[in-house]
Image 1: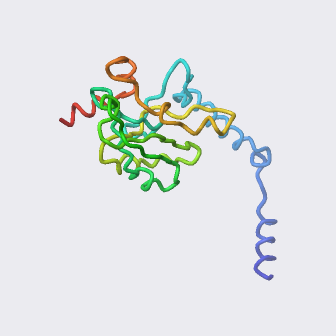
Image 2 (image 1 turned 60 degrees about the horizontal axis):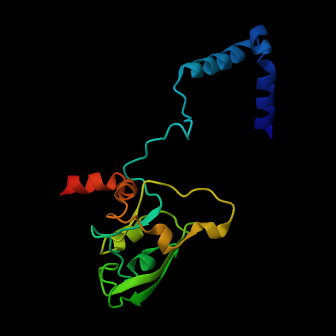
Image 3 (image 1 turned 180 degrees about the vertical axis):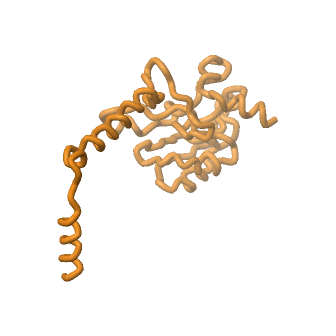
Length: 185
């Protein structure tokens, strides 16, 4: 209690100068800082016209990959679903029928493959767990929407375009991934 009263007395003894009472030095200092921000580079980007470059390790939307002949790489092993800490991936396996060799690489394939993007934390563990390089995270991000069901992506929405039937869309969906793969080889 005594320390508090001595502190109050010290404050009362200290008188402010005329300039300090006007707060002018503090106001000018604040205006100088604000004025200096005019000359700095603006951090905002006009998004639709300009696109921000992403980091090389950016993880965006999931893509189900195909091989060069257009067959799906996924064999429905379930390792991606097991590795997912958010339990965002669900799948059902099915057996390949006679005559479907041009659609699926292996005898077993994912008949149903869904990813709930509201649960996904974009950690990339599904990509690392896949032994067939069937899933990867692209350089695009999930669009905004008003309904929750629009964020549950089915197999048809996740599949990369067919490389033979739609080569331009296939290359666009690969993005910089094709450049990385050729650099690694």
